[in-house]
Length: 255
Image 1 (cartoon, rainbow, N blue to C red):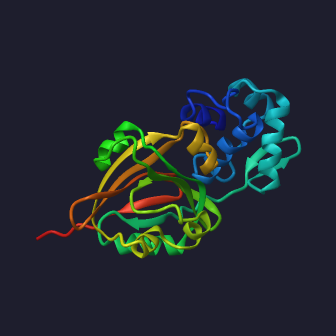
Image 2 (cartoon, rainbow, N blue to C red):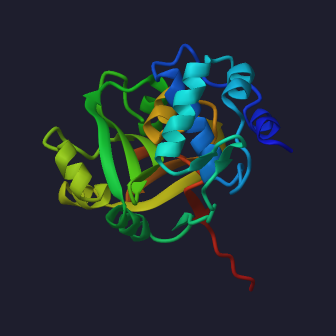
Image 3 (cartoon, one colour):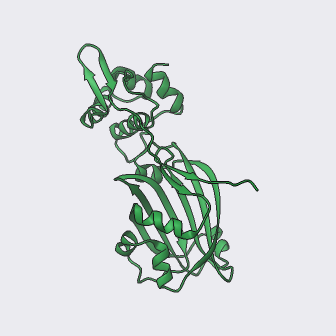
């Protein structure tokens, strides 16, 4: 299968999205880079030409040229005069692994080994489904935050959480320097157990932009509900992961 057909088979709904606030050339660049980083376009594969990209994804030749220029600037592709543009990247999967089951402390360890950036931190009234989760009225407030987690400078997780344990003294700086579990313990909140649900979800614009991926890319989705010893839910986490950079691992034993 040539590169154009490969791209069409993966992005059958088309990209880029003219309605997105992200420039068209960057959307196309991010899509092509994603295909290269994930091994869909292999080392040595011929890239679609500017004309092919323009026709396939309904963008201008200038947009296609700039996307390819940005790939070349990162040495992901190499141009060969008279022959075309070829992938210059060797795909080597190096996924960050995390345990799906086990102690909450293992989650705290991952928090220390990776970097967090807080995009939003607010104390607001939750929507009805979240209020029901916590058993509160919609007039009460919760701490709502949006964060991204990165490993070696590459964002791989997009988190939206609602927490009943924080007060308004919590800061973005503290959350970016120390694990949430540690900060919650300082405020007298200790989780005794957590329930997790795994599924999949297409990347919506906010998550796609934060993770620097294409809108609609399939993401691993995890919902985690955390409870204190008395059974009270104190935290609700909606986590979206780029599976090209992260995976959950679960070990089973036979008895």
